[in-house]
Length: 121
Image 1 (spheres, rainbow, N blue to C red):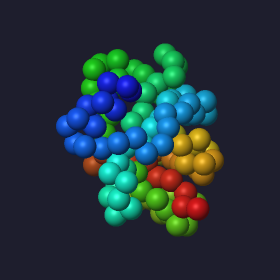
Image 2 (image 1 turned 135 degrees about the horizontal axis):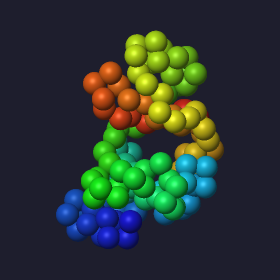
Image 3 (image 1 turned 180 degrees about the vertical axis):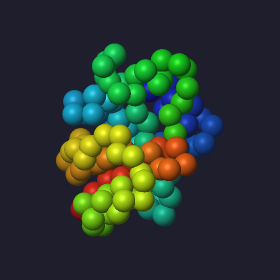
């Protein structure tokens, strides 16, 4: 994670906005990078806390995991709607330290793209 933070700072001019901090529920270490401009979307970096972390096997293949995170106003209803449209629930809903305990869920779209959804405050 430290190397990634330096790379994002050097290459893209992003700075650390929050974290890194550990999320024992998700079994990951998380931080957010960005420009500090409220109109810009932050970048979330995630690293596994151990070999049993869900993302560990993927990263072990030396691949970067990329996904988009959407904030949902009506979390439960929106999640049910996505599932009715053949989105596969991979994980959650569960609270996430990175989002102040708000619930998150991970889904694969029918196009096999991974997305994260987070409950809006």
